Length: 191
Ligand code: IMP
Image (cartoon, rainbow, N blue to C red):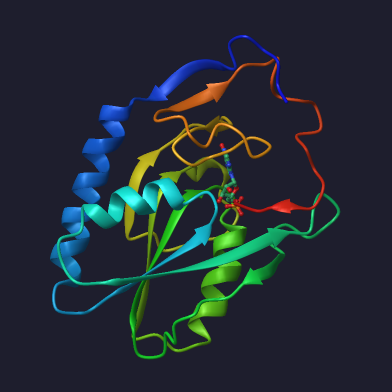
């Protein structure tokens, strides 16, 4: 448990900025998917705060489902994931919108999109709230992007550090006292 008195060194995105951007994303998705009965797919746990707000910003009928994955830890190949919970929906022939909290190297998302594409959805697009394009290692089609972020580790609005800080209503950078040198590299909830 971090003991630093001030765990957040600076706020990158305020609650109001997040609210405005999520509303705009929801409106764009509603316009593009009207009449298509889309399925929103999220990866637990990082996406839950964004998904909850995004859902309420999309005023058309849709359904939602979740995957849970774990990374294999520091010794594994980047992007290698273990499926802890599969979707409950059959996505064949469905218009699937993959909702992500953060795309960084893109390797996790690349693996998951390949998995979903094998199930032959009618369409498969990505909406990510946060994008760190400077760290990208694979080319990925991102249809909706909330914010581009610099290469800094951020927490809040669902994003964690060692499972903490997901409940912050804003997005902030962690102070140096909190960030440990090894970053917590054992087998872990990947998102
Ligand atoms: P990648 O795109 O495969 O490198 O990994 C993306 C995942 O790494 C995201 O879904 C997050 O779970 C995690 N991640 C990347 N950057 C951050 C960050 O700044 N804060 C919290 N989690 C992050």
